Structure formats: structure tokens, C-alpha cells
Image (cartoon, rainbow, N blue to C red):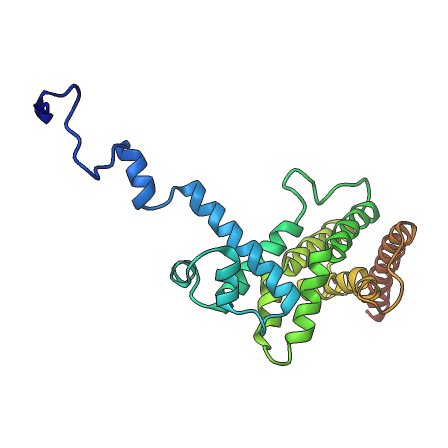
Length: 241
């Protein structure tokens, strides 16, 4: 006669019962772990970054992002409200990746000239990185159809942070009461334009890209001209009084 199930060694296991631990069951049917969720988020953003920079904002669809990332649209919408929200997250991620690591000091040098030259080098390297150039091309190409993209990128960029840093340096080192907050903000903005604009244009095809030697000479000349301009403005303002 067949042996009764209740007389077999070990617990009774019914057909189809999951013999895995409760933790394994939760991983299969429950919410993903924090590590898995972060990994999935990074995959979505990396796929979206590649598509936005290669295809443009208008041509990139949520379906394409979801398909390449291997997720459902439902999973996508669980994380992002729409394509604009996804693009904002992509821009934020690119900007964060362009920032120097936390252990790299932004303000370092014996003189204001040295500090600004180091800062100019950090800013210019970030601006000339492949993803920064690709993002600049994207915004330039799509700004007519999607004007909000320009404002979004500007809001996410480190421009305001850099302007505040440069303005504070000028106030601390030049110690001229005529350098009001408004004047310092204007000067800082001009410094950023002097550092980035022409090398970025050349890197995008309007001339030959900077060579390493030209890079060093560029930052040196920009800082020298900038400081001479600030000191000249201060002297001119003094003479007017």
C-alpha cells in the first residue's frame, strides 16, 4: 500500500507550494529592495540620456525609453510624471556628474589670480566635456520648439553657484566698497562668458578645438584680462568721484 503523506519524513508539502523563505517570497512578489530601485533608476536615466542626446527631445518617446530600459510604461509613470520630468532628471544628473568631486577644493591658491585660474580650468573642463557639449547642442537645436528647455537647463546648471562664488572672491580680495553686489554679479557673469563661450563654440565646430597648451594659455589670459578690467573699473569709479 502507498504510504500515507502524514507518515512521511519531514513536513507536508502540497503541490504548488513555494518552499522558499519568506524573505525570498517578498523579493519575488513584493517591492524591490532599495538597491534594486536605485539600480533601476540609474538604468532609466542612462537610457534616457543616450536617447535625448542622440535623437533630441522631440524625437525621444516614453515608449522608446521604456523599451530600451526593459520596463513597462506603468513602471515609468510610477517614477516620472511625463517626458519633461524625465528630461529634468537627466539634466540634473548630467550637471551633477560634471561637478568636481567633493574632495576637490574649488578655492585654492596663493593669490586671487591663482584661485580664479584654477576655477576657470575646472569650469572650462566641465563645459568642454562630451556630455556638456551634447547637452548644449540639444538645447540649441530644440530651443525654438521647446523654449522651456533653455530655462530648465539654466535653472539646473551651476551658473548661479559659480557667480556667487566669484562675487564673494572679488568682495573678499579687492575690498572696494564700490563693488556692490550687483556689480560683482555682473562681473562674475562676464567672467564665465569669457572662460566658456569661445572655447565651447570652437569645440562645436566653429573653429579648431583648444589644444592642451591653448587651454592653459586661455585660462591665464582670461583671468589676467578679467582682473585688469575689475581694477580698471574700480580706478575709473574712484576718479569720477
